Amino acid sequence: MDEIKYAFFGTTAYSKELLLYLIDKDKFPKIIFSIPEEFNISYSRKKVRNSNYANLEEIAKKFEIPYFEVDSIEGKKIGNYKDVIAGLDLDLFLVLGWYYMIPKDVRELTRYGSWGIHASLLPKYAGGAPLNWAIIKGETETGVTLFRMEDGVDDGDIIAQQSFLIDFQDSIKEVYEKAVIASKEILIETLDDIDKIEFKPQKKDKIEVFPQRKPEDGELDLSKNSVELYNFIRAQSSPYPGAYIKTSDGKKLIIEKARIEA
Image (cartoon, rainbow, N blue to C red; front, side, top):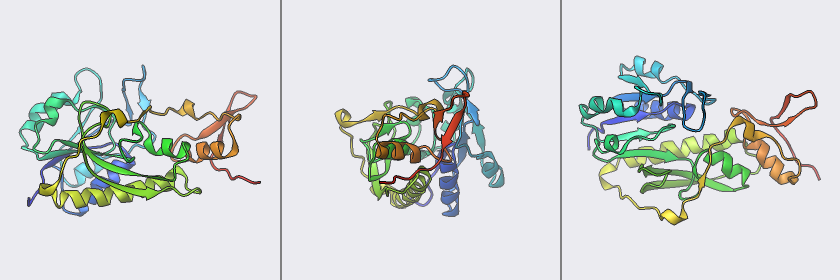
């Protein structure tokens, strides 16, 4: 295939890195969808702030790519853009750093479906915050999975996977950087050979779904042992809100870094 016609969905620093990487490889999206920095989502009654937000509109303007913002409030759902998408005759959606489900009738407008990269080796650590959870659980290896989206949580057919190590001194920043590198590699290799891909179904009973993490989930439980606390702290350090303890004057003391001594 000479040119892959795709729509790009993203709203995070991860999204930005991959979008710029694809553009650098002369793989320009036909349209970009993003989400505001403060947005509505199902698990919160009020808007939540994306602590890892990236402004993709600047990229869209620079390269003259059509751009739409999406928020899950009445009148601004992705489905409302169905007619726009239908007119583009797309091969696929690349959904890289996104917070909403894309409706089945919209996904089916493409030749290859809607693809996402999940930062785990599915079926492990499906759901929210997979890199954070992997560190909290003390994993020494994780990876990324390119998969075709379905109606469930990260349960679609696997297209490709790539693993990498989590070193004991790694914070979430280092693990995130490893995930970005692996994502770039797996993405470009697959797109360059798209006609030869094979979709491998996941075993639904093996999928482990983890919840999203909120800032208040970062409170330290000092009954945990030293390794558990160390993992908890490095899993939520910058650019995330951070692990913390509550002080006697009612404030949060953020623990950005720790080390274990015998």
